[in-house]
Image (cartoon, rainbow, N blue to C red):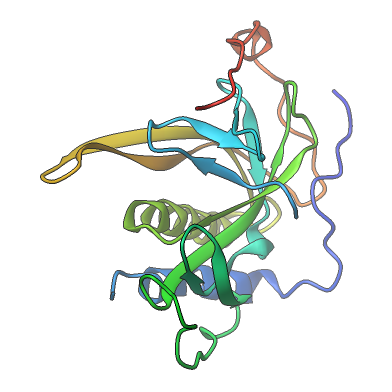
Amino acid sequence: MSNLTTFAAANLPSVASLSDALRRTASTVAPTGGGVIVKMDKTGHWCFGADSTEVEDDSRWAVNPFSFVHGYIAWGDGEVLSQVMAPITDPLPETGLAPAGAKKGWEVQIGMSVKCLDGEDKDMEASYSATSLGGRKAATALALAIAAQVELDPTKPVPVVLLRKDSYIHKSYGRTYVPVFEVVDWMSMDGTPSEPTAEEEAPRRRRRAAA
C-alpha cells in the first residue's frame, strides 16, 4: 500500500463548521429557478478534458469535503459570461443584473474538487460543477452524506466515490441521464486509500474519446 497525500489541510475551517455548511446545501441548491473538468455527457458517460476522454470504469475518486462551493453562473452561447462563487461555509454570494447575452440569466451552481485514486488517471485532480437539477441533487446528496460521516467519524471526512449514473424518461427529451456519486469508502484528509480488491485490480475496459 503506497502512501498518498490526498488533500492539503492547511487553513481549513473546522470539521464542525464543515458539517453545518454541507447540510445547508440542501436549501441553497434547491431548485428555485483546477484546470481539468470532469462531467457527465448527454449519453451518460463520465468524461474529462477538452477531448472528452472517458473516465475508466470503476476508477475511484476522492472528493475534497472542504472544496464545496456554491454561487451563480451566467452562460452565453456555449461560453461562460460570468460566475460568482463562494465557499460552502459562506452564504450564497450576491449578484447584480445578469450579463448581457446570458441565455438563462443567473443559474444556481454547486461545485467541488475531486482526485483520481487509481488507474490511468491516478493523482489527476479535477473539478466538478453543476447547474442542472440532476447534477445539483447528486452533489447535494454527497454533501449530506459527508455531513453525516463527519458527525460519525470526523477523522475520515473524505468520501471515496465511483462515478455512476441513473436515468429517467423526460416527457420532452426522452431518456435523460443524471450523475450519481456512489460512496464506497471514507478516508482522512491525508490518508491512504483502502487496498484495491481483486476486482478493482482487474483490467478495466479501454476508454474512448467521447463524441
